[in-house]
Image (cartoon, rainbow, N blue to C red):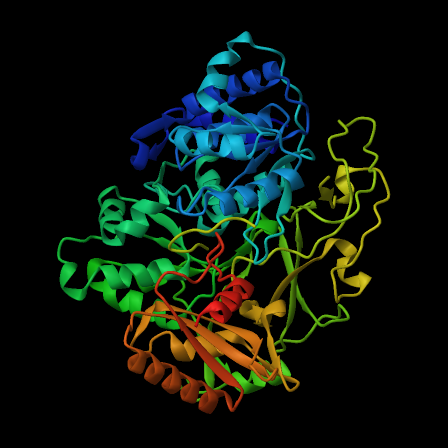
Length: 611
């Protein structure tokens, strides 16, 4: 059972590759796997000595440094459940940030929070606001672990991590992941890109509290592949500097949401490639937000002279509920884009071919086929599978798929655990799945948005009543299929994502994808860094409208009026829609989640508050 749990897998990797290391340039740390394993053992003993209970949910509050990995794996080794918590994006709204943390810790019944190095200042400010939390230093507990209290036996069916998804609301929702989920999910990543080839070196700047950062890092660590983890701010402040450091270290694999590749295109001009060598970069994951075919093409063209091969760009689909990976393209394949009739896609749910770049056409990037151990299907509202080229909701199943959710607001019901297992799972309910990764991370990563737990049959012998997701029949949850909330279609084995079910804009009974309106706005002169979001709204007369909220650098009233008028005309003409509104806001104010998606409701409310 050693390698079938998170700490067991680390122990195997440390035994086989003791000198393989995880490097943290931002904190000037380099940790060998042998030392990482030892530190997690010491922390586990320290937690046991401190009285942590089996199945107790423990917060992990740390920057991208060694303490984060020690805390997550050490807590799970002690039989506790690691709950990564988001870091603040600024010091301006401490009260709002504290309220989000309070919502998370309340939903998960967290009392102990493991604190990593470098956050003492913010913890001192949070302490009086969150008096029910006991903030414990990772270093202090690790040193206290020399007492060597006995460690419990952890099994694959025990919960290892609760990953709080970013979501689009203030209600926290934790994805419950067992050790089995984590081991299978990270193994699927390894298998899908053949991670561990000679010379491979993983890298990330994504926050480790986010699933794409955490499980991407663990995938490398658990097979002994060298890994370098930067702080998010390193990339955000200086994308070009990060890219040069990445290349200089000989890194071969790195993930980013689409906006990260846009940032690199902005930061590195065609005349700045002379000393940049990207020939070793073989996998550039592109996920966690919609993959833009324009970005894909521009990136290959811009960085091709520096050695970036077109097939290095690797568009993927994933989500926290799948322990990250759902679909990957075939290795060595260039990204593929299919062009479909935009109106028929939205109105009738049919992916009918259209000319590339033609008026009324929408380009969708192929996201590959299910990874090892993952099953996927496209279904209608009655849960019936749909044929190729027909849009429906994506459902997934497999060993890496979540055991359920921790969420707030439902009535708890007692759950009886089998006699052979610790009674660490306490309540039952169902929540709507969190937004998927395909529809990762903002330039200023946002915050994650008596708990209730949905558990899979392998976690309990009790009969668990399952309440279906809102708007879906009970059949949609049968046979372990998880409804993702993402809309898409297949062509053969290839998956294409068209949008989110709950984000569809409906005006006079006609469907409109927000992405279609946003694509018409992003590249308009005057739009700040292509940032815009489309939402359903009502005008002053109460008429339903499609409203686009866009950031702009324009300051003169006449210029802003001209931009808004031109955009409104362009959107209306392209979509055949009269009910269009455009609202302009200042740069860097549109709210995003930690997975890079705009908080649409908050964005709409922000726009309404503007004069």
